[in-house]
Length: 180
Image (cartoon, rainbow, N blue to C red):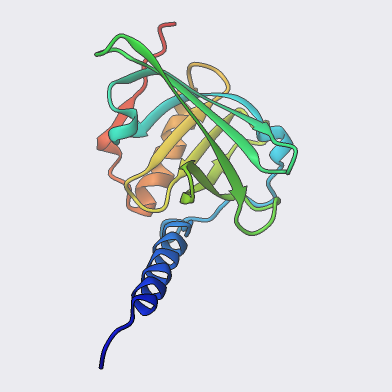
């Protein structure tokens, strides 16, 4: 059986669609639940990163903030900034977030690189929307965020207990310094 060039092209398109489709999946760690009801308008604005599971895009960053604003189409603009204390320069990454299952459930998918999305799940938040815990797709991604540069120890303890119960190794958290 001879394979035609158009068949190879069609197979390539199919494979590319599959890769994009799989990369666009936004999941949540097993046992975690996204906050519901979730009020996106209250979540918008500036947040300070208190700690994170470290990964290459945030390596060597201090003074990390995330600023969320509403785009005209209803998506959320994500503007992350941090100071690379090794290279002695500011880094910024702007992306977008979309709700996975409706705006009242804090399950989003976020993208900084074209069609590639990752899970962004608000799994804990206080009633005043001052402190939040964010889970990524799996147990490799976790953030504690605050409207201020610090978070009360009781809130940190509560969030870390919740994270441990889900299987996170909280000893691997990097605690973000905010000097600026």
